Length: 204
Length: 219
Image (cartoon, rainbow over all chains, first blue to last red; front, side, top):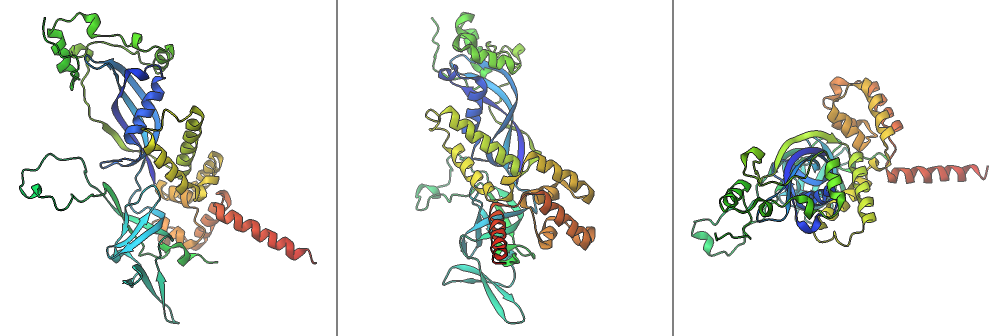
């Protein structure tokens, strides 16, 4: 689920923090910059693991702060392909089942990856697995708050850095705000035996 | 006297430095040694301990070799896999450290770090990982050597502690071809005996043993 990522960055320490230990200031700055943020094509950054190398610190003319090039390792949430994860169902919609891990919310299980046959109950707004046995069909509801085991089948990174003003005329009348896209989304699947709500597979 | 805008923050060190070079400012005012700004001796000692000297010179003298790349670089996006237990340990230690140092001055910019550590700790605490220890993990990995599993499969077994054969089939690729039924049983036995169970399973075990004791009493 978590990986270690080696990165290099230049950290700026303002003069009023010069009395603090350099390592502490740098750790704080790096965490301030990266914690709980998604880095494009890398993953969701959690916290600093360690600092591997500090290069010389420079003070440039016109700016009283010191600039240090830091080599460090960061703990990043980046599940590998086909990894099994356990999360909580956040809700259901016609697009599929939305799952959350608490610290990461943008996980979707599309309808085709649910245990088949599945149907969407419009009244209760939940997805239902119509489980067939010899006695008849059981309707297994995927309710909000239930723990669910799923496999990661795909991930997508969206570059959400701001773009310059577009020259198109359509954007002058902004009836709708630009859609907020999640920078990092996972697509899951529960179409195998053993996957789905934990309560479906526990043998008590 | 040449016009020199003091508040212009240099985008690229070389450009600004070249400007100041041509302004013929005396070297002492352009290049303020960082040592006079660092009031505590601790700062210098710290960076000396880190093995680098806090120098200060006017960059842009290309001999200094400073290429100001302001963009953060990712050197290796996959340098190592971490188990949930390692992340749990790291975050718990971080939380202890920050509690000790006092959080008054940290609150403003540290909100993101607080949020993510709280949520991640909350998530990991509900998994079986919270009762693990470095010795248990080492024991687990040595016991796993005989089963010939890939690193990713061993990591999943460590993080999830499967108790049924169905879960093993999910985590081990092509388990029907690679493992016989006895091997799967042996694997399950290794996993459940070495790795401690999660918090709810522990509770259930305790209530079961209590029930057993009550049954014995009337006899």
